[in-house]
Image (cartoon, rainbow, N blue to C red; front, side, top):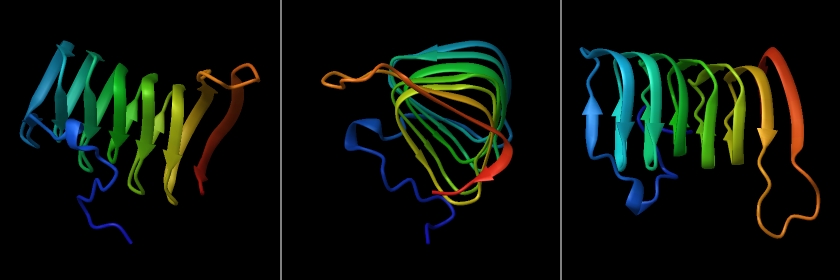
Length: 138
């Protein structure tokens, strides 16, 4: 079983450079190139060429585009990860997903649709699936 703050699949290049603490509340458009971890509240839009971690106690109300995203807290909005999206057991996502790779732990809450983006070498067109308001198990 994973530890409370275990982000075991984080690659070396994805280590967190900046953290918005649990006492931070931010509204607006956030753009960054490297890595960010949100532990507090955020409302608006997030755009990144880097890596984003939504911490276990975070409440995010935003559309998000990033290279890779890990969700352990709550997100309300559409999420697009150009590389991969991982949802940890405490993660809740109320919105649509677009990603090449998706990993969901037992206990995740996901309400929305999922579009798997085409990867190089894949013979079929983009796959689609849809889950409505039920916990997802792997």
